[in-house]
Length: 380
Image 1 (cartoon, helix red, strand yellow):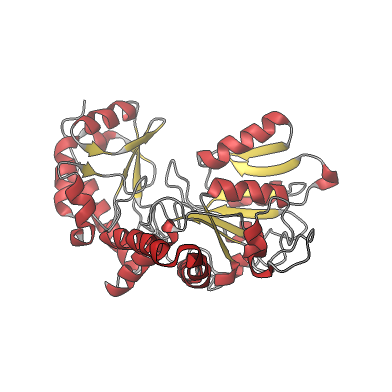
Image 2 (cartoon, rainbow, N blue to C red):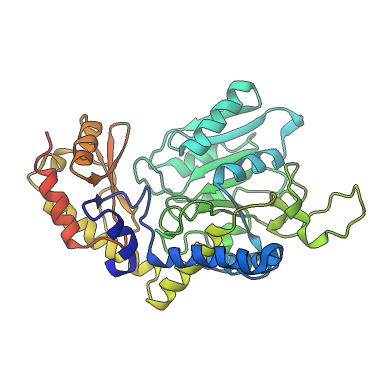
């Protein structure tokens, strides 16, 4: 499927990009989407917003809801990034006695949540309980859920590739608290329909287009369960976009996910998302098919690195035939040095602490696996 990425591959022909879990290469379709956005702005000027909100936004909602498994497009809202949505969520979440927000989370969350929660904790705006990522994590969350306002947990841990059973966690959500927020940044379009309607009735879901959706930045999204936070206190004027004729001084809200909307935004990410989704449909490439391709490449990689230093590491997320992260996480004392050494050879991986992550995607083939294995044999 490398032909779908001809522009990205041609832009750096000597690069071996093995970090699709970090920055997935953009397919050619995303370029067409970017151009479509610019052309609409030039052709329609201020009237572009009628097309964006009337056609582009709803199409993107349909794609996201279908990929999630909720099949509930009006429950999807977009933002520039997931951090923006985390802030809006925390402000809207019911608090006990109007005191600090009591948050239950894990020690494996991505930096957008980890850093913000730590800062709120530091300032006294939140009291945070962090559970270790372990096989019994769902049971531990249930055991500790009482007296918490917000439960925040990743479906697939960004550092280790650990997959969490979120079904019992999602069921804990209630409009008056606790609110359950599932961070799906590494599960969206890596797992088939990771958030079915039964989950979506009681939990929020955060994700974005930057990873496996191959649409780039600027496409953060959130699934919002009905009845949770009807009047978010952090609110932009797009939250009442359909009610601009309201009397002065009246703060109106949409009844669907638009109630969490902000203000004027860059719509180019939505254009790219839609263009990539159309490409996948044309090529008959479902998330299941892409995951199967990646799983085969991962198995080939593990075979190919036999006898190299990578084979002597602790693989934190071994292949077991079940749904799996789109990256392999190798724990080793020299992970950072190896990442740097590979980078000097034009091979892009990344490191989180002492974990080297190698991510594969639709843009890779067997030749890439062989090239990486050859470089792995030189690691010191």
